[in-house]
Structures are given as structure tokens and as C-alpha cells.
Length: 324
Image (tube, rainbow, N blue to C red; front, side, top):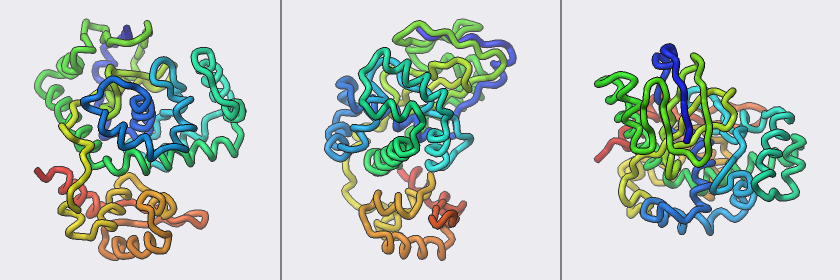
């Protein structure tokens, strides 16, 4: 059982995250990928994803076992709606002392590969490999389904905000589902271990997660920014392959539509080329067209181009998301 203790001040500082958290979705999905339960929701996705992820799974799975403890440094708080690059940079910037402590704790319950010792020392090459694995996993396992992931998470957020408006914070906490029970001033959550989290005026972020399964989860270190990551409802058949380009693809062309979707969370030219399995020059050419149309903006730093959707581009993506 997880028991979250609220003060009166904490009840005024409960908020719902603005959208999916990229690193929590990676962490939860890597764990879900290794499990066998939840077949109805995740079975088709597991069968689709496993053969596409040999290298990134090999690196990430030992750090994210399907049950028990996982290191908190893998899901840092990176601010409101961070780009994926900013989130990964925050992870790779973890202090070596914390890396050592959290990996040592993981080693008490799981067998770690040899390279984990280098990671615990903060070895630059190993951290780079971890960053590359996160980018590859995101591109191959999540981006093809990101439209559905984001839509379902945002639908859950809308339900939470409706509960808040109709009944206040207590209604919001009560509405988290059968695995959460509000017994003022304590929120009791079904959990595999006994854990106590005292908010002490810091408030709580409720983070809907597409791949969180089957019960809510939180960080192991209570001194970190308090967050409760919880499961959501899924659109039936969400992992079914697309049968056509969709309205955005018909408007822009399939490749440019996929590139625009990728820039919704931010991507570099290298990441986009890897994601769509096209050449760097082809990505640059398509990005030039999207930029000329005012749908993306590009920032160049240290010889790399990083692309983000503009307000107009995000409006197109939002229109596609909410189309029946």
C-alpha cells in the first residue's frame, strides 16, 4: 500500500499534468513489454514492438524490470511540456552519486549487466549509449502510436479536470479509480510494497500514463518532486495498423505529416531520419517545406538542427487528434 499524506496546503496544490510524460511512457512501456498480463490492451502492441526493438530493449530492460524497483533517475522532472531532447538531457545530467546509489539499490533485487558499473560511475560513453537507446526506443515503439497515446492521455486529463471543477480536489482524488481510496487526509493507493509519501506542502502532480499498468506508481525517493503516475482508459484497438494516410497525410503527404507529428514533441534531423527510415537530405527537404508553410521552426545549435511545431503546426495536429 502507498499512503500519500496531505496537508491543507497540499490540497490546494494538486494538479493534473498537461499531457503525456515522454520518459514515464518509455519506462512504463519497457516494463509492460516484459509482462504477460494486460493482453487485451497491450498484447497486439507487444507482438508488433518486440521484433523492432532488439538493441534498445537490451539496454533498457535491465534498468526497468517488469516488477519491483526501478531507478528514479530514469524519469526526471523536466518542466512543463518538455521536448524529448530536454527530458533525455535532464536524465543524462544525473549526478554520479545519485547514479551509484540508485543502481546499487536496483542491484539488490535484479541482476545487472556489466556495463551498469560504467553507468554508475557516470561514464560518458555509457551515458551516450543510454541516450541513444532512449531515442531509438521512442522512435520505433512510441512515435508510430503517439497520436493515439496523446489523445487518450488528454481525454483522461479532461475527465480529471471535470471532476475537479464539479467536486473540488476531493472529487479529483476520489475519481482516480478502484486502486485509489481517499481517506482524508490520506490517499491510499494499491501498491506492491509499503510506502509512505508525506507531501509537506509540496503538492502532488497527477500524471496520466498510457502504458502505466496495472496500478499507479510513484518515485521511490520521497524527497523528489511528488508525482502519482496512474493508468488510463484505452481506445479499443488502439494498436491496429493504419489503413490509410489519414486527413493530415492527404493534406501534406504521408512523410511530411509524420514529420510534423514528430515535431510536436521536438526532434532533430537525425532523429527524424531514423524514425521515418529516410535519408537526412530527404528530411531536410521536407522540413524546408514545412518551415516555409509556417508549420515548424528550426533551431540550429552545435551544428545540429532541432525542429519544433509552431502554433499553427500544433493547431493542425490538434485538429487531427480530435477528429472523430
